Length: 317
Image (cartoon, rainbow, N blue to C red; front, side):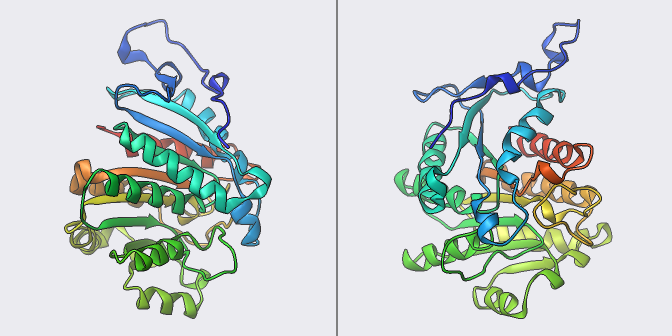
């Protein structure tokens, strides 16, 4: 169910200079109106870690969306558009399956209204509802062509399980694509070899997943990575971008369900996000940030990283 928007989270410093150039996020965010507003960025939280619990991870990600909002609130605002807070979705009676469908319906509505949904997690179960909402929006609007799924993650999240969890969302997407006879176009960057079994690598190969290992994402390898991304993006009608914060080193992002022993450095991630924006332009339709767990954060550093990534994802929107 969707909880009321908590505008009390959006507080922070107000500079004496009242000009727009001195504004911060908390002065720019307004509640979302279900009847529609001028197109802008729509922040939607998935206050859920039922998928993490089912996947035997460290629970606590349900508190992630509001903690990211607090980190965003006092961050300087440099954009021109509008930002709306849609509130949080929370599972009723831990019914994750119903939550994913509710999320998909709300994402579709936001896209139908012309917004750029930026979702805040919550476990990575957030991914399936994001994808499903985008696919249904494209179908209803008559837009044809493959959807490109780009995931920065230490894990493929292609695990086969009896019930959906934080390790299954991209296999759920693959199954959906197979059932609806549409291409499954998935690129995963930052894979940890030691965090994925041989069975998962075999599953990725079977599904023709494009990927690079964490040790293959370095600044001196940008030409090869950018070529991979350019070739992947070229045939896509729309792009869905997901960032699992556990792709970053544990020292950079300690507040996650599964901290990375190595990870991908933040400057590398930021460079690749900027490159994706230049390649996709209006084809990038929505994004989400997953697996933030404030219970294990140190000095709020993971929340600050998540807020910085939010800024980069909407830059120039």
